Length: 96
Length: 334
Image (tube, rainbow over all chains, first blue to last red; front, top):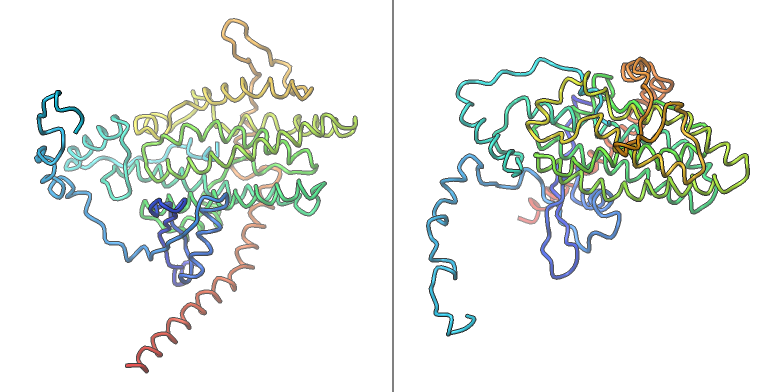
């Protein structure tokens, strides 16, 4: 069992209903994409949780480095002027 | 619970000096009730504990299909059979969610599975008891899944994100398991005297093993301190066991059944049900591999694994053949 090629790993994303984005829900092992979709259906959607499934080879996902998240996301933390609450509008003007 | 073997202490890894700062960040994240995610830095001990806990939990789900599988062909009606099949399929699903969560910690499912098959990894003691009557299927849903829910609800808030998310899915599904089990018990208890006696007999056999699912008494439990600090474990074994007894005794009384514990009584002052001493020598024996069904459970699992090997090999070979054909067609077209 250990000396064989491991079965590829796929990340699974499901859309709960139209209008919502696909959301990551876990992973499955499967020999190919078709079987990965079938396995994802059996494992993650036994109670009508989904109207659509995406499977993506886990190895194909490029992720940002958690160790660098401070540097990577720092530029936004100092830019309060990107938020509507940064601007003072007199109450008399009403909702804006 | 499904991870009782964790209560044996192993040599815990020391912290390297350069990790002190990272450890502080880690602990403050945990203390703030934020989640730790797969690629975040974590202490070796945290990773090891989680791999052991999640994989033991997964193994328990997988082995847990066997006692119930025993009754698929003999379920008393189509309705019961459909429910039992759905429940057993859920157990397989729970095992898979959990293996997937464990894999995010840098270990492969094949490795974990190998540990189960070789006997190196443990699974819950409860699945080493036999299911000779239909009432046992009712008891498993009502009590075994009931105890599992008691243990798993706090795990939905575990500090490790993938484990917590898997537990949320599991808990949603376990509720169906417990209710279908109680319904079986109710039907038997409202049936003929023989059916009621069958329900009582099942409760007599399962009550103590179910209480053992929560693991050793707090005074003998070794792993609690780290797991509590890391917010993997939120309630002690004895606290969860007490909660379970308090919730379950009235349900049993509603069925008109009696519990096989002469010391069971309601403590008016605390409002808790006091229960008798658990036979820990039986618990240790079963965890160590000497329960009524340990050998059969492992033999069956190994046989199933061996019998299914050709299917996995064929699927891999087919996928490879299609990949090569697609590649050849591309080259021909160019």
